[in-house]
View 1 (cartoon, rainbow, N blue to C red):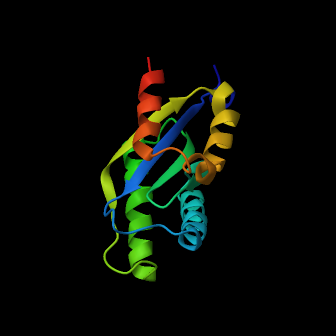
View 2 (cartoon, rainbow, N blue to C red):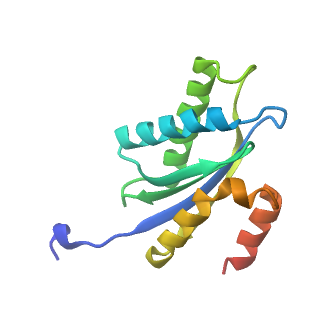
View 3 (cartoon, rainbow, N blue to C red):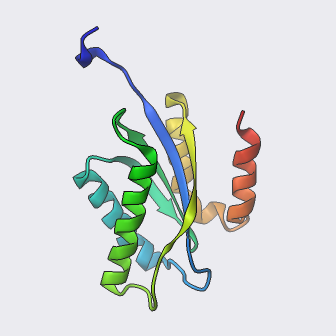
Length: 142
């Protein structure tokens, strides 16, 4: 089979949190941060379908190329964005992300639903905490 005919779809929903609970990603910070992360991802060949979040965590949906390593991509996005936040002095004090993150594979047929879910993070988190959200994700895993 010719390489130009390969059909490879690797979609991953990734969630990570801020490292210091006393710090907060306010709406104006999130607006510029998410734009920066999307631009950086595009420059590095990382296909980010959507990014959004609330004060204490971020969701994004990536379509990985088969040669991309999930752990390396996540580390790259988080390291660069934390450094950018600190260099830009957007938050007082030293900003960092938690070491842990969650990553869930998504079937191509679920991409639209996940994009819609990520786009509604502010509304969603008016009634649910990150912990309750992750509990739900854990229950639907096989």
